[in-house]
Length: 185
Image (tube, rainbow, N blue to C red; front, side, top):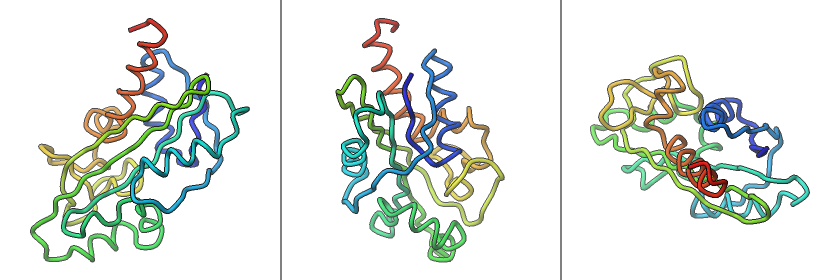
């Protein structure tokens, strides 16, 4: 049993479905962990793993960010704070009238198994829409359209989103590593 440390219902749903489909059970540990102010989401995850006591057992944590090219990668590692303060509407207002709308989502998973730490990354290129679309997902999902798609993440089912998303890519890497270690690959 791996404990997924997250206070985000949406993240737990997305990730636990992917792990369960491969026979790996996740239990939600609904508690925050300290997130340092850092230059990369990887630094945030590595620090977070160090702060959670080893007595908690095997753990999975993640940090994600939305990186908008024309804003120099902003909000990036500050995505959660910016979402809480500006929301999707604030991002759309910032970008009003812009034609260059390229962005990417990045995720870093930190997996601590048997005291060993493993790091997995996922990235999804796309664009910021000109309006909020869709009712699903969470966070910036209503304004992010993955490359090659016409729908935002919020217009997709969890399964569809996981096919394209940054978190889905990181989860697949983590699952592959876990199955390889257990000999079930």
